[in-house]
Image (cartoon, rainbow, N blue to C red):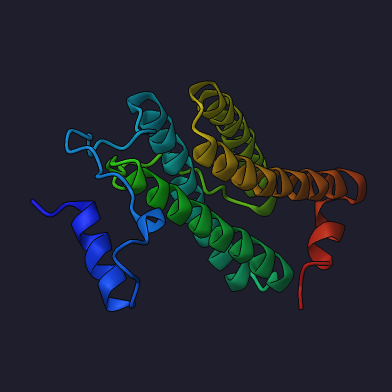
Length: 192
């Protein structure tokens, strides 16, 4: 077995450090150290899989809705919804990266029920409900990570949560506009 002090000694020799320069020496690393990830926790991995399922479902739902909007020539809505789908992809990627760091296995083949909606208003209402659920799941994940002292996961979830709240706010604004001006006037604004 190679000792850390032997490696350090060879590095010192290669860099011209004199033998009596003891301040460069460090104790050997303990050989009984576990290679287990210090922040791995099955409860947090389960919560991350719940969040990943929400994100993957949102990606599918938003992409279908964006293409429906493009087909109906609601270009502004297409662009906005496609942007949210891409943000959800980034969220999913970050969750997957974190799970792998925690020595977990992301469950990418499981989705929540997808409810695209048959018209713009029903799409927004479905998305509003999904985002509400996602915010609750993120908040419980933040609380869990904080209680376990897993600050890396907590920071990731807080960052994603802020963007989810932005999606929620946008959907709430769209539904408010529909209620105030009527669906026909709202849709007239969504073309080119």
